[in-house]
Image (tube, protein in one colour):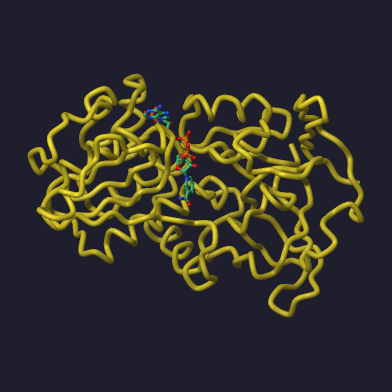
Length: 331
Ligand code: NDP
């Protein structure tokens, strides 16, 4: 028997979350690797799945948790054997498949990567999907020629999961980082992660209506989308790039024009962490292990247990979670 956070939605549409005990034979039968989960996390999508909103979960009862790290218990696949440490992000685990809010998970071997050298399972989940996606974003900006030494790089939604890890990685690589936050009380936290300046959310929240503004940023990692992304695009320097990661502030980009792309050669890079091929995932995890200072990572951690998840799932949808929640599923 093992414990799991089970989300249910009845015909009356009432959503419940409770910790239940399950047997191994209740795990997804068509998985081929069983993992003793050690840690999972709380990402924005987890908030949607825990609350059964946003249409991500179609089948109930459901075990959320879009990422986890742990130890292989048994495997029918030659690539993994009992005792191997592994990490999982993406592949709609925690949405269309039972995920990491449980002491055990059964998944497909293709979705796993070996834990990179130099990271513990807890550190891997302090990074989690949000941090992994930040690393993919930094790599995408570098592929377009971003280098330290120029104008600042803007990070939006900076006190959240994606933003915190992006800030720490960029600062460690030598970039000047301007962190946009709606929580001025997180200024010391963001400066501690390496942000060189803090930009108030309200200063970036409303586009000016002009197709171009002064060139202020060398590039941007944007977790907010909506009106903020509309404004950011008008302020990117000639030839600079924006890694568009999320939509915590909305999906619509009202008032945006094609002018930044035409007259400034700005690149809008869509970042998707879900269906990444194995080689990309291994490369990004190895970069996390080398480019993210572990003391900074520790500063971001908010420890949690399975029992905390119903509340945290609500908080993250309101933008009230700071940094990275690390869920010890055995606590
Ligand atoms: P968090 O909730 O941890 O962070 C989002 C941050 O955005 C908040 O902390 C807040 O930062 C800011 N924010 C929230 N609401 C608003 C608003 N209405 N207007 C402006 N800013 C706002 O979420 P995550 O970091 O986990 O995820 C961020 C986004 O990235 C989500 O949309 C998520 O789905 C997406 N994502 C996408 C991935 C991909 O593969 N493309 C992978 C992972 C995440 P502050 O308080 O500092 O202003």
